[in-house]
Length: 501
Image (tube, rainbow, N blue to C red):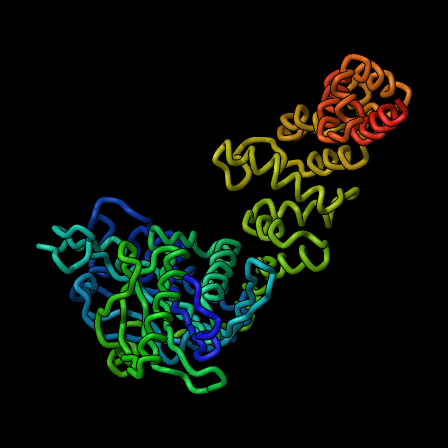
């Protein structure tokens, strides 16, 4: 939703995001129940995640490690000591009537999220903290058309999700538009996928986002009264909800009204936010240290080991592709968003003995390889199959054959299945099988002369100024040469022959 420029000058949006990310662990946060999406309701539960009397929680070490890994990727400080707290509030789908969370001693403090926008503008947003907690269950409000509590005749509760490890990333209010908010979220998603922390599927609830939005006069350093928006289940919803809330608050302020601090829900069907409840403050939750869980202490060596295992972040890859390799920003983003292809690109272009041109190899990966992966439903290497991934040299050699003119793009299409299977095609193989590109001028001229002689009408059109007809003749020459003629030389000889006629 566009905002008039004259209004932008009067008020400045101030946006902070709270993102909840379900971690990719085998078991839940404090018990041994399976951490899997879906399943029959209330089948992945036990006395611990149901909060039954006498059941004691045990922290999931892997969840703690993944949270620290996320913090290190964003440059957070990792304190040597941490602890879990009880956050007291009532939800119908929270079995204990309190949530095990973290308050004043989170696992990660500070940090910075770097991201880019669609026009390649670079931004950053400070993090306040990243902490670890447990997820709640899920309520289904039955008997209403839209699944909301209002109008429903009864509610059903599924506790399968209760106790799932939930990492919360809290930003500082550094974002100034819905576009920046989405860019920030995309950076989180890319990073968590790259690190193997979460599948971050918003439609399955493994990535959930709340937005704190306020407005203040341009030039002011004081924060305005904020509202918190919930129930956004896609990046599109985040963008629309924030834009709608900015518009709503601006209307209130310009009419002389006062924005009320509250929690508002996003209604996708209505395209609007609606009031849910007054916003709680930290003291309303009555935090205190969980008496059933010992404080945590981390050795510097363990933290250093996690740090050394970190791969390159998506942002650092993007910056390298655009700034150093001069990739178009859109194509660089596409490569970053295909983590396995991006890793293969980095390996081949930096470690191979005879690396292909980076732009050519990028086009190969995002073209032929990506298309084949989509056909097979792959996001990574096929298990148990000798392929391009198990023999990266096959891809590098193949692109080099294209770059140096040994084969044409037509021949490349025919040869790709052999490359996919891991075969390394050399110049000797191409010559032995008669698959090489024809670049002999005299040989190509014979094809050109034949085509011109058999297409006098088309030649006449070109001489009258219809240059587009030249492509038809070029295609006829390529067909006559069975796709082997050098296209650039064909075009040159066609123009010479037609011009001299």
